[in-house]
Length: 203
Image (cartoon, rainbow, N blue to C red; front, side, top):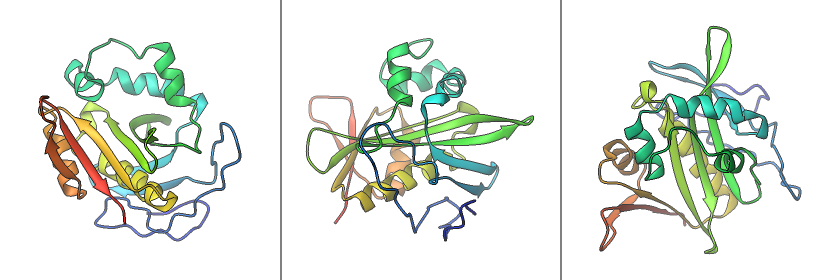
């Protein structure tokens, strides 16, 4: 794994964990940390570019959404829609990096960059707590891309001082439950609901 800016990077079991993150300072407002980009080689995937999402990525994110089956849309959003609503698309691409972390994975296909995954950690109203989510193109699920992005989001969250990261997962989402176990999340069934909470605390 390498990073164009030359900061030291350590791969952990080929999952693309960026062990020595140098976090950018965050001025007020919507800020894109443009020096916070790197590449990782993943088995069966190839050279994956990892970087924060930016406002100009709306079309790429829409194309990623189009690769999802209705079942995958339901697992990610707990409902079904044929396209990302305009408000949601804007919300997902106009990121205030003081309070959110949103990383995307991109691959070159026929000379063009294609967004193949999105992972994010969003600060909640509870101090020190944030909620995570992951979305991976259907044909590339199970190949370590989601794990790579989420692990890096978690590492950034830890370095920023978050104390607890959690996500809500449907029981049908076997891959996400398995990934949660792999990444050390505590999994509990939410009383009175079909859903599960995946939670990980940082000391």
